[in-house]
Amino acid sequence: MRIGELAARAGVSTRTLRYYEEQGLLPARRAANGYRQYEESDVRLVAEIRALLANGFTLDDARPFVDCLRAGHDDGASCPESVAVYRRRLAELDAEIRALTRRRAEMAGRLTRACPGCVLSPGFANDRETTDAHAHDGELRRPRTPRRQAGTGRILGGLVSSLQDDRADP
Image (cartoon, rainbow, N blue to C red; front, side, top):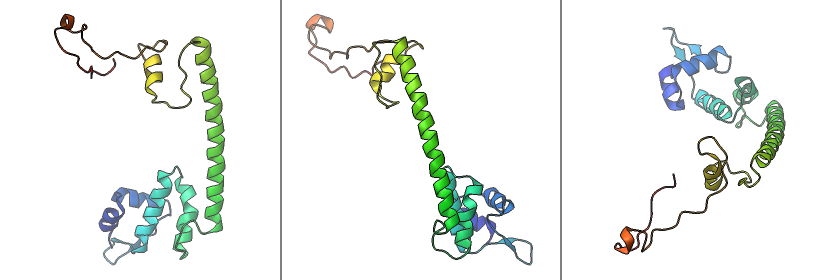
């Protein structure tokens, strides 16, 4: 198959395929007319590379997986070199998680010292209460009481029956 067909089937651009070729990950044979020719197995190679990149691997990390597939293995992770890359990347991720955990603890301590009564979410960055308590005008605020529902007596002196207040909190 030619480069355009491989690109379409693998969901990448022809430029990406040329880059993989430059990096030695994707061998291209040349037809008599000079066009790049690829095999069916190259679709699997590109899919393996894309999956690894999507999980934070580098092209150098992907090399052992590609070599494993090109050697005829059904799975790019079935070779010892690939397993070594998995182990190294997991160790790197563990180190990053430890560093982020330390940074989070430091930041939580600073927040607690800056605003002793402020809500501190146990780890949910999108927690509504934390966002409301801390995201207004760049200053810290203590948590608000929840907004009451509209009721008789609040709307036009009680002339309108109770309504649900469906406005979003500002």
